[in-house]
Amino acid sequence: MLPTPPKRGPGTPGLRRAHPGLSRSCRGAFRSPRPSPKSSQADGASEELQQLDIQKLKEKRDMLDQEISQFRAEGYNVDELQDHISQLHEYNDIKDVGQMLLGKLAVIRGVAIKELYPEFDLDVND
Image (tube, rainbow, N blue to C red; front, side):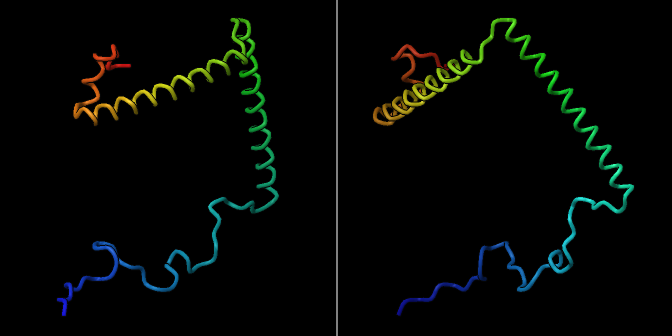
């Protein structure tokens, strides 16, 4: 007969199991974290807040339109930006593959990856 292992408490050590049933925070009625409007006074305030939000958004839109116009005046083009982003993604993918290959070669040779950099004329900061 095999010896029985020493008894441990159920579950993960240091963590207690919750008692069955609902916790204190779940027993009461649902309370929304957002305050509810209490009267027509709240409706008026809500309308004012909406108008203020709309005004802020319009101002932000105007500011962004101004920045876009400035970039276009400086010669920037959205299509060129997308092309540049695409090229950066391709560069990063190629670099990741190179790092993976250097890692595998370092494991085969039993050396640190940084020791391979001079052999391939690579800068450690690249």
